Figure 1 (cartoon, rainbow, N blue to C red):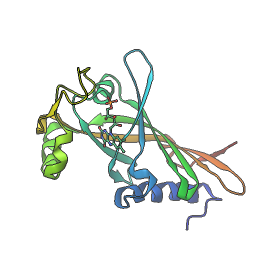
Figure 2 (cartoon, protein in one colour):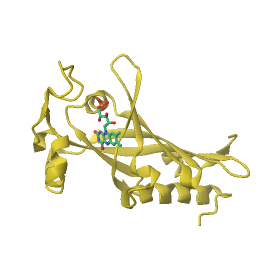
Figure 3 (cartoon, protein in one colour):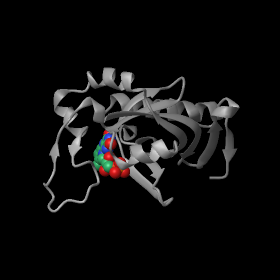
Length: 184
Ligand SMILES: Cc1cc2nc3c(=O)[nH]c(=O)nc-3n(C[C@H](O)[C@H](O)[C@H](O)COP(=O)(O)O)c2cc1C
């Protein structure tokens, strides 16, 4: 059990719950929400599957069709937010991150690990978000060139723990994640 009454303990809880998202299908952090901005500046949020987590370096990996709007938006500017509401832990996690694609060679290597049946997600004709005449007027055409691995380098974490007292803290990469308390 993490000691959520201390800054480091609360951060440990965040780390543990995100880590759980990688190994436990029922953990909330398996499905974080990624928010970007579209070309008009509108926020755009969507659910994604957590595919990787480096707990020491605070990076999260997500997979997408390379032609999806989110990838194009992040190519324009890497600023994004990630959000998890973990009801089991009474914990909201809000993160600020720089999200960039991995080099193509690394994406190609990771593509080999994507199970055959999962590959259909990466490469539709026409591309995701294209208006179509009927719901089924598209087909999958999976290929490695359409497999994007997004690596989110977390810059800021805000944790809100709901309990007998609500506790809110902010942690910054630039400050070595030492953290500070905020009014919830
Ligand atoms: C439970 C769930 C999991 C999803 N996982 C992913 C994912 O891992 N990667 C992905 O690109 N889209 C995923 N999606 C679809 C996205 O939410 C989104 O609809 C799609 O990627 C298109 O978003 P975009 O046009 O903003 O790029 C998931 C949707 C749901 C409901």
